[in-house]
Length: 231
Image 1 (cartoon, rainbow, N blue to C red):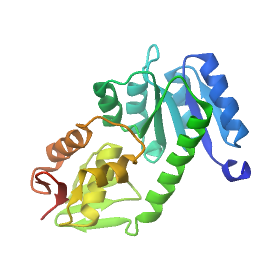
Image 2 (cartoon, rainbow, N blue to C red):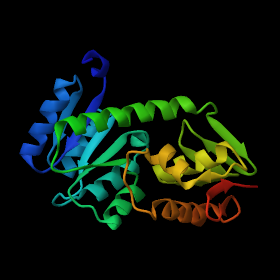
Image 3 (cartoon, one colour):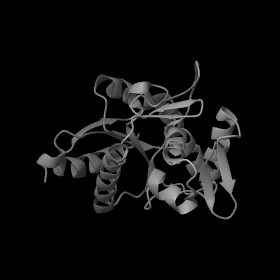
């Protein structure tokens, strides 16, 4: 089992040394390659030197908090597909929405329970592998949009439209089957995973941001059900 994860790199970022030690010990027991950082600057240096497959990121840190650090990482294209899971003791919807808005993938609650942590980490890695395998078409060309899954880019003619990671995944999902109505539950499961607890407004926030960037003509609301890509 340990060999299965020997090539998987995980970066843990937390200003509490005891948290770093507990998480590192348990992940290393499972065979993962683990590196640690106690602040945002150190985390960026480590990530750029050896890009991780998954980052466990504390929200509450001095100087650069987890949300801002996630924003900076997502602005660097090499981390587009890196999984980022937040370590947090805070459960407010606005905190979760802020973290998801900048490209977070999941939340793991403190205090850390090692067996739960390992289970969530493995689930996140499996979900990422399935999602990559599910995408048969690297490039979708619909009306005037070109959506490139491999490059994580969206173009409309000569214009490139910059999207956050979850915005891109949501657009790609809807555009992969034009006309199909995706229920809110289906969107949650496909984009965030059924085991991720997020606020009720999360999908609405991401749809609103997509419409602000793309215009209103592509994504339609089907009242009481969900959303679809239309043209």
